[in-house]
Image (cartoon, rainbow over all chains, first blue to last red):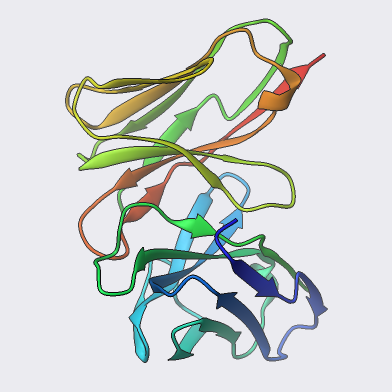
Length: 116
Length: 111
């Protein structure tokens, strides 16, 4: 258990509403990631962070924004949710503080989001 | 996008049978990882292979990295119901956002 929690674990929302997912770690890892998982696509990177206030886009970043104001928290926001954003969202962490993004990523339990 | 294709996408076998899952790409990776994911949980790392041609064994699981470092395979001997899950390969590239996941193989082992 790498000390990663995600909240909420399940959420149902309506098209057009804003949604924020939270990832919290207790491991002091430098890198944090948000992925979405859809059938037939594996996991696809949305955004990642390489430090407090340092973030960058991944493969499928359109419609998503992120923020990291503290080492332990990484927030994913859907400004105006759409049905195509219905998915399971995973947070991951890697790289102990002071090091580089190591190859091993540790994943949280996931958040199942349904946009009606 | 560095696409990783896994085959088969679904596999259902009887307990005790052997199976092989393949992970193929046109891209070269510095190393390759295999993860297993159970329902309602995040993926968990099983192994990392680094050297072209490398073979690693984890009990009944054998992982091989292709000589050209573009593909990999996972072989399970005498499958057990506990092996049931989603198997994901992930190519490791340069940089912090450095994992490129395959499409996944969902394995069901029937008792």
